[in-house]
Image (tube, rainbow, N blue to C red):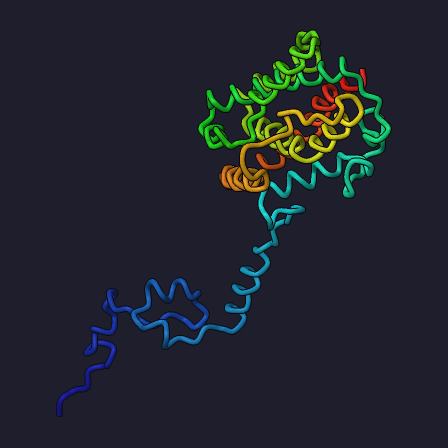
Length: 282
């Protein structure tokens, strides 16, 4: 009768080290997928593992802060910030208290021709500067705003010529215009977001409140003459919309920080423009 050999000796293949055996049930899912030869579908992971992953994913998503007017485009953000810097006499959305003479309603203004000429001369210097910067285009985005139809320099030159023909002496640019012009030149070479803020506020303010001021001043001292400064070739509303679209497009490439920086420049724009506007009352 043959002797029996122990199973542990006769089946020595069970000890081969290269045989992959199922891991314990408490192994992580990542280890199983990498090293275990069975399909993932055949494994049932503990419910708590799946729940933990879901909770972690949900808590990582935080709602992004929305800024006033952001849904309509960056121009609307600029408009809302600008409106807050108006007085209630200047705009329905105004929040600023009246502190300077030019911030009062135009109805109570007492303009002079000499003061108005100073305002027109300084305004022309600022528009000359703006249009020169846009034409030079130190930053590619500036070129988007060439020949928009909102340009005022040529129109102001026509008005100043008319005053000269009426016998008025045309003054040299004064401190408010010179200071603002130099600031715009410096800003445009190093800070495009801040410069665009001034570009927007100067052109859009003139097309709105500026026109109303021009009409009231003309009633009081120019026998209702409408200056070329307040005339545009073409449909003004469409010209403005075209520029809004371009501004929104340019701002799409800005970070949120760059947009905020642009908005923060609004108050400076109002201060510089206010100094020039005040010349009407000098």
